[in-house]
Length: 275
Image 1 (cartoon, one colour):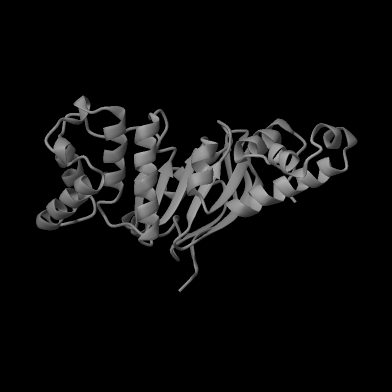
Image 2 (cartoon, helix red, strand yellow):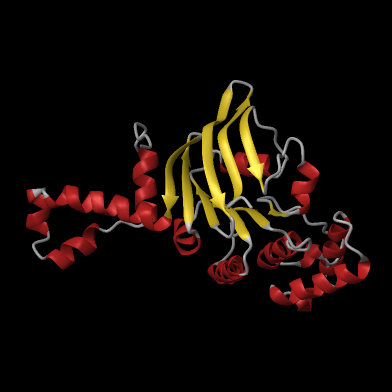
């Protein structure tokens, strides 16, 4: 069995004369919690839409669980759970009805769909809203319902496009904890976000996009350590920094950068290129 859940090679996407993605390549191992980060317009959503067959690539090859989106889109969709950035729940239906109707797209029988829906409502702590109309739900409940719906077909891979956008800290933390549990159970997760604290807490491996190109690709530990080591080493030869931070502990703590600082350094530097 292939070790990779998703393999992307030389992926390119044009919208008329605009290049949304330029020769993107990356691989996601089975069981990974993989992140895509980048500023607005970097190409994050375009990648995800291509992977779940909503958008068609201009060039490149994609392998998802040994299948091709061009030839096996239906088979792939049956093994994916998708949480789009835009809320597309049916507001005229109840919470429970949204799950049951969605399960019909996968041919799940009534008894099994009821069982799965009940389990998912319990897992995401929204069982008390089972009979509530979606239109009456808060933003936090709606995002949890979108996550529950994405799991109704017991997918091998979950693709999430900024699933916590606009949520308050309590709801974000709740969703983080659920995603960690799902990943520990063996589900491969691919997720985009522009929250750097979220990326640091969740992702094992990550790509950073800027202007449709990958400028960083690696494990979260590697990216943080590589950039901080280079930063500290460069500063250690600077007499001004030595004078300002004469004690090593104070100096090193002062110079350690968060992912957000690294991210901002990169996107502000138009000449930055990945090695």
